Amino acid sequence: MQSIVIDTNIFISALIKEGLTRKLIINSQFKLFFPEYEFIEIKNNKEEIIKKSGLSETELINLIRQLLKYVKIVRDSRIVKYRTKADEIMGNIDEDDAVFVAVALALNCPIWSDDKHFQKQKEIKVFTTKEIIELRNGI
Image (tube, rainbow, N blue to C red; front, side, top):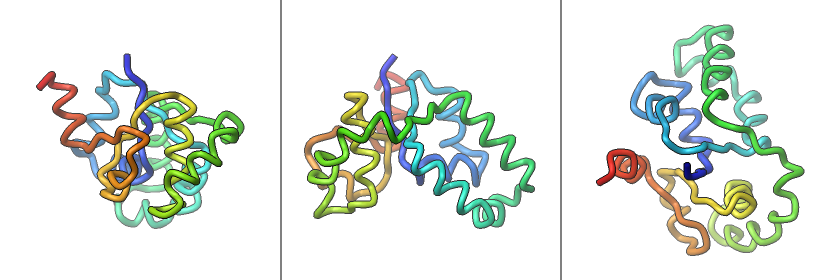
């Protein structure tokens, strides 16, 4: 089973709407990973996610717990030695997303993101949601 790092927008999309992204995560044939630092950011933006999703705080917490059955949190301590390289890769593109590259480097795996700026770097393979669907369906 292949490992894939998911970006924050993918995770938040699964929280906000019961749609394709959530189904892809729950029914994934991949091992999905998410940086600890970004998980803290999701917690810090809980109110906005509740507003957009229409969920109560309890429902959101339960949904996060459900998704974390399928997505493993990668501790910051596991990726610290990859941060310099990740910063070099993403520094001129979007340094805030270097954490995803660091996880991908640590796990030697691709990233799942629909953010076009990830495509500007050439070190890590990045799959869009469309490509994840194609991989899942064996196209």
